[in-house]
Image (cartoon, rainbow, N blue to C red; front, side, top):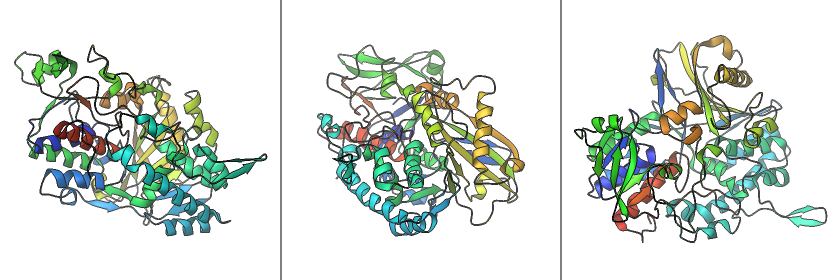
Length: 506
């Protein structure tokens, strides 16, 4: 298995339970892929995802791979409110977790003019899009006739009369303009797409499922940080006798009689693997890295005619994460997550057009109430996150580039946290350059989730044209995000154990 990301580990644990001997070769010194932690002076920060949706994916993983349930291994806390939103005009709204009625009431109170009712009606339509796409898009291997998923927009949009014509929304921005109407609701909708690295201006209407997931299934925090989830999955793998070799870079996938037959390791990697100078590890099956990167590991074309081809990873956006060590205690009743929407939403979207940075971006502010993340009660750890161009689109390594943008993020965050700059002891800035180093993703890009629609997002299948070679993780079906990574691991394990007729868990 190439890499110890969340999707790969989810597959490894399931395969080990099924009786396979599994060896994971990871080129870095730790597991988890993008689910990382930064520590300094008693402060701890999640530098990848800060919250978890669809925890059922990982509950299923733990049920299927051992006696201890997920909640026996980590402490899950439902975050409430799900998020506080600070809109461009200064209006604020705190949205309850997993409560459509509560969200409707909160938006009505904050925005007035039937805003909550319109958002609630939108969520009903988003639920229908979710029900139409949930199983074929997330819970089953990518169909051989995958074009069916791109043949029709699953979102049941409302007819809109315009210039003597009746039209229906087929893009997310049209939902905002025609169905939500209030500019702050449009900011709310766009924010969900932006957080997933999806351009709201070109995203299909089916991207409505992104806010629906939060409202329907809730938003969860793992006590100690999301890195604790990666630790629990890693330990479950070890309990199932999965072997991990760190500092071991795979340089080639071996081919024998037309099928994947193992991997070749780099010079230092072979020593890390304890192969006594040998650079070859034989295997019956290889679970690979991102489909785009497979091309550099094999002379054969990984995907045959008619398959979903991998696109260049660096065309997708990345993220800048600013870890703030703060003096002073966290205020009581502070929201865990605050989304500070850009005062110029169009500037945010320029990152998709021209790879340029907004003056004051949309910033997600995470303030966990977790003693494990701070040295004592007189300090606070805070994480700021913004979606940005990848390292292929913007020179994040240029002198001062990262710090200059971090300054803008802090300024934006101060709209929600007054006096933030005066509380700072120090900060750590992480850019797509760091993401590329840690995950191998070209340009430090972050994979978007799969979206079914004519202009949707589909990722290459977990199977390849090379027998015995599979792929797991965010760049494979069904795409990016913690739940999707766990799903990809379940799909890969099912395809290996049950064969090509596997159709997903029932």
